Length: 205
Image (cartoon, rainbow, N blue to C red; front, side, top):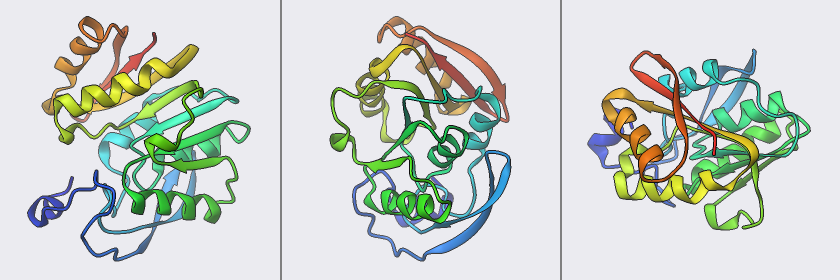
């Protein structure tokens, strides 16, 4: 969350942000190409691809070419759009509680000609869907209990052989989170990279 969002008390992890939309377009680099996307106020990092997401996208291997892929906490969509561009034959679930963010993901998918993106609230994802990959810059600022609940809801839904990739700030508890995933959640987790103050964690149940 940016300093401006903190000062205004905006919460991009609520369903309907109270802040003005203030829609804008950005030129960003996703999946090896420069593209134009739409963003708005009241969503995470509306003016750029945040540093943590940049670290994640530079670190993870290519996604599986088929199957269901999940961007957990999608915001306006940099991770989901990257997955969809890299794996056009996969179905990409962009999941968030923020309705404004989901609307932006849908708009951006249309803008980029992507037909394989499904933007959905958590409860709108069918229970029987299993994911070949989960990529996430999770919303750590929702607090430990909520974050732990989020991760234990979705990471066990990885398909056999699937991998989860998380980027978490070192100063925001990446190392304790890794220990918790291993010792309490029972999810084998390794640190795969460390860059610019972030850890990239691989979860392979």
